[in-house]
Image 1 (cartoon, rainbow, N blue to C red):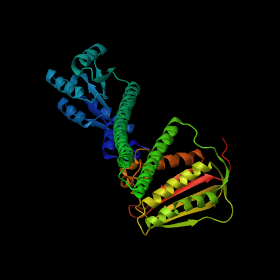
Image 2 (image 1 turned 135 degrees about the vertical axis):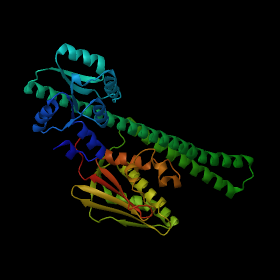
Image 3 (image 1 turned 135 degrees about the horizontal axis):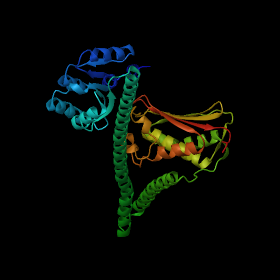
Length: 401
């Protein structure tokens, strides 16, 4: 496959095409047509130029190799123009120049004094044998191709560096948002606790109001405990510490337990909570406590982000050697650009989770717990306002460690 066929970017194709051009400046006799004929017979692209100004113009366009007769220099002015265009090359580029003249000494002098250090000079002495000439030309073209390959790699490295910086900036912003959210979520229940304690100390509350105050304090402490538990779970995840102790368990009763736990909240929220669990027993190798945590997180989110009058459905089925748990809703859904990041830590604050209390760590913890069980979890949504579905797949048999 040719370079042009392998690349579709017009700018890259043009650069690769230019890297194969051979510019010939040999103003004496029939040298230029003879050289061009030899090269063209071998399928190489040749451009004959009449003088140094024409060579400079073609070099500005791009070239692979320059074939230059020493007598082409009419004086210092023309040599200076050629040297100038060579010095303006990009840092990765050193133009191969095949310089042929009457003797090595004369050619070496002209090369050093006239062309400067940015020319990659190959000296050829007349009379010139075809085999020697083609060997030198092939070597020059191979070197030039390597220069363009270096340029391509440098461009890729530069693009990668830009992406790394961009990703780092995104993570930094996400962490800053997370810390701001953490501060807010911890401060809110603490403010409520302090306020109710002050009222209790003042002694102005009757029995019913005091009971309400204690209930509110208890609720606030539960909120704080939940936040701290999430942070501890994430800390364990980052440290790579074991979070599960699996054993063979029936999944049906566990899912019924999860649904029963959230049915009052669903009813209060005005959400229809449906369950589809088969009667036949389905077992899997799970940590029951952590399995319940997975279900609680998924079902809690589904109810939280489904408006009143919507529906949430939990189902259990067997597909091959996997138990499949699906939690779907008719709620807010997710944009396509959020789906790839929905399980990432610190990214939840950028999505719909901003509308509800919490740190947005729940789904990151869920994914870690599912993976710790040897399973997978995926999120699906057709877009905002079209609901979401989370699919958990767990191995039925004990994973081989």
